[in-house]
Image: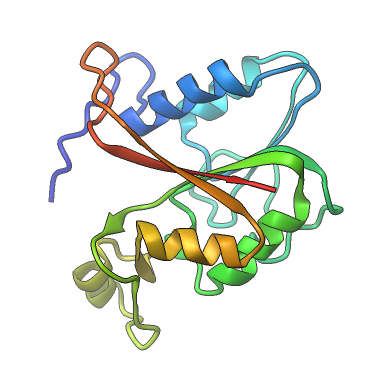
Length: 191
């Protein structure tokens, strides 16, 4: 099923990558910031490597993305209060033990730090069924072969709050010039 996203012919970024980079550049980049980024897109990984005076760690457990390390999001091998910013874009819907992952994100985030979170969303309640294990059935039920659930905005917000975060949900409007999607949702989780 096509999503009609506008792919950049220059860098290969999706609209969500461009919006994320815009938010990060405008609000978070500063000298010596400690950033943990789970499975970044290739276009963003390349941008990060050009930034000076930041400490960016890209992690990917699947081996499908460019990364510096391989961290299991449910057992991050870093001390408490390590990162100023954590990027968790289209990750949690892949994780069976998502609440354990959320608690780990909270543990390694510095006080006053932020986790930027995005997943596919649906109306109503979170839909998950761990008896669904085949790729064919996961595609049918969750929209992708390697997803284990579809979150609702309120359901994800509650799980994150139960894990210790304060959550702000922001909806962004379309930007035709930058090719950004209309009504894009991002959760800002702070400690």
